[in-house]
Length: 110
Image (cartoon, rainbow, N blue to C red; front, side, top):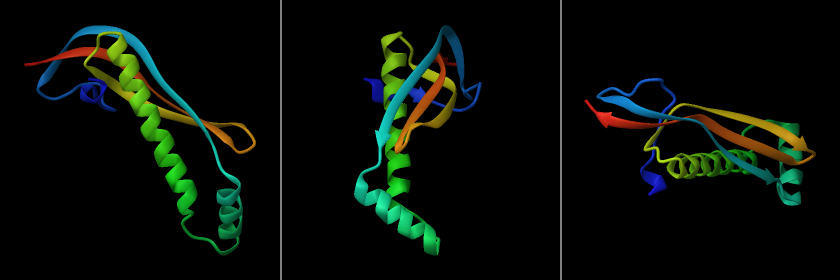
């Protein structure tokens, strides 16, 4: 199950060693903001503070990207992803792409 794929930002995992390397894997998602969120965020920028709708959008995008990353790693036969990183960028007005990427590996307990 892809949910069982361990994803870490480190190169090594204490108590485990890498037995196979499958290469880079990516989990990509793109999301757009809805008009209500855009208006609310615009108004919030006038007074400052946390913009809840945008925070939710970012969290949802990251979670989807990680799930897609796990799926890609599982498809290669891996049981873990090491050195995971995120990249996010606007690809058009109101639309952002979030990429989770790392190296798919098989790990075994020491």
